[in-house]
Amino acid sequence: NAGVTQTPKFQVLKTGQSMTLQCAQDMNHEYMSWYRQDPGMGLRLIHYSVGAGITDQGEVPNGYNVSRSTTEDFPLRLLSAAPSQTSVYFCASSYFRGGGGYTFGSGTRLTVV
Amino acid sequence: EDKVVQSPLSLVVHEGDTVTLNCSYEVTNFRSLLWYKQEKKAPTFLFMLTSSGIEKKSGRLSSILDKKELFSILNITATQTGDSAVYLCAIAEGTGNQFYFGTGTSLTVIP
Image 1 (tube, rainbow over the protein chains, first blue to last red):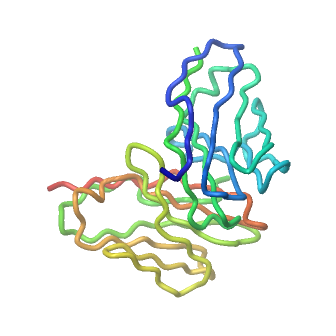
Image 2 (cartoon, helix red, strand yellow; image 1 turned 120 degrees about the horizontal axis):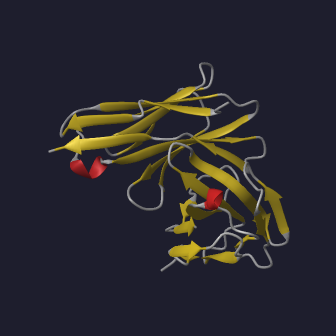
């Protein structure tokens, strides 16, 4: 089925560990982004990309890296996990930079202990 | 400070009621306003608004934008239990690459 696929769905990390959250879309969307969602804080933009080879920082980029080597994939790397990074992470993609038809993945629930 | 403020934070209504959700915003270079519905999973897209005074409608849901007063409303008529969700408002500004979400309005519809 077409859409945005995120893996894993759940993950528990120890403080200081690193990991990569995977995101893939098969809709040929140019625009991809990563959000984190915390209670009372809403969705906050971490990093985004407007095409292969182009990435930029969002509102809360510290502690995260991204790369966009292909149109389809946009992985998010946690360099050294901290308890403050416990959150639900969503990947999203769109044809339009203005957000029309923004498709979200099903989310990754990450707990850092 | 918050760029997007939604009210009320939560709402409980009975089936058949009409509800109005509010979203006010403050950005320097407005591009578009978006509404999403989030049940216990990923947000799903409802509307994108770019022009004042033009109502977008989809079934029992409708939304309108006022760029002068910097707010939008989402109306749901004849509510059903399936409308229970968190409704998110987001603003795209500048080039449209940066999005700012409100914290959402949690709607519960009681049978």
